[in-house]
Amino acid sequence: MERPHSQLIIQLLLSACLIIASPLYADELKPFTSDGCSAFPDGTLQQQSLWVNCCIRHDLAYWQGGTYEQREQADKALQSCVAQAGEDQIADVMLAGVRVGGSPYWPTPFRWGYGWSFGRGYKPLTTEERGLIQAQLKQLQLLLESLSQTLNQDLPQ
Image 1: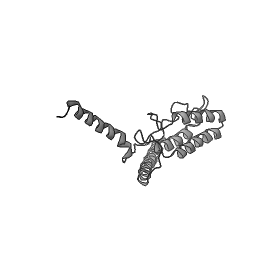
Image 2: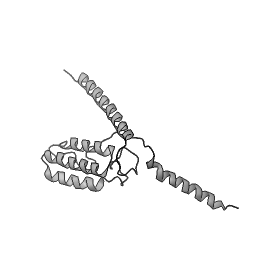
Image 3: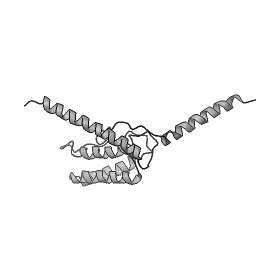
């Protein structure tokens, strides 16, 4: 005779296994989003958008995710971009911030690989995943081009 609790325990264990294993299966890529420099200013008081483009490029890399080495490259590119805007000390502070706060193991909306489900961690992008990224980037490009045309048409001459 089976104990009444054993069936519940088996169901809970199976559910836990499915939840834990879910990042191992093909994942869906969420649309690209950017909040600029996340919890950091987008620029100085005088130039409030001075390095926001650096952050958006950094967000694009973080959205895609990939290996640990790719994350290091993205973080160093952010530091270099902000330094080229003339803010060496800010660039160093930002690098420290993203190295600590951008881990794929933090359940934040700005973690490494945030386009994928939480739990992906560091791993190379597959051919299929790169195809999903390229398709979404193409859609984004078309949307931006259309928006730009619309805005140019609506501006007074």
